[in-house]
Length: 302
Image (cartoon, rainbow, N blue to C red):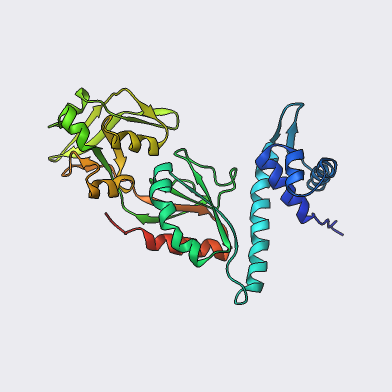
């Protein structure tokens, strides 16, 4: 007869917490356990699954490859159990729980946070935890439920729903134009102070657009650069230079006249916005509700 063993749900939650913090003692205190009992629980879980989940040293604690693989199933299992409990309560209680939502820094701070307010008021028992970063966020490792991303997704283990079309714009403040003049051609950007953005550790200073039916690429330079899109936008608003920004990030600034689109008739590379989440058979109702809400907040095309 096949041996059946039962894994303690508390052990799974502890494993998930330790993978987040990299510290058994801190995780134990957060869950109301003693460090000794938490350490014993992790060892018990490793015996049950027959694999070492953490690589331990005197100074660090990190997931092994087996631990990283197992973590995905633990997160999905606990979420599925929460959804089962929520289904039992559906119709009797409001949606509740925690949603971890990732987004680019500028979009998250300036637009998304404000547009989430009606959702928060409608579902006061749901807590939305924002994870803002301009790097590609690993949904499994960082345990993020949903993430907004620019550009086409290629990871087959994720589902990507297109929220809206989008593009880049070359823009600056009226103050910059008054002080330094407006570039009359795309190539003239080489004589201006351009604010560069770092993506995945590499500087994004080859700006590309199509003007008058001809594609043009200009390598720009300037006295400042950042890997945070919100800071790039802030510098542009302060009049320090010219930026190449997502239209969604600066749409309101352009409408209010705080920024000027220097080449409004140009075509730039498409930069559609997607909502991305793990490919799971079951999605908690709170996530389904947020996905539907986000689909209503962004226009299908710009």
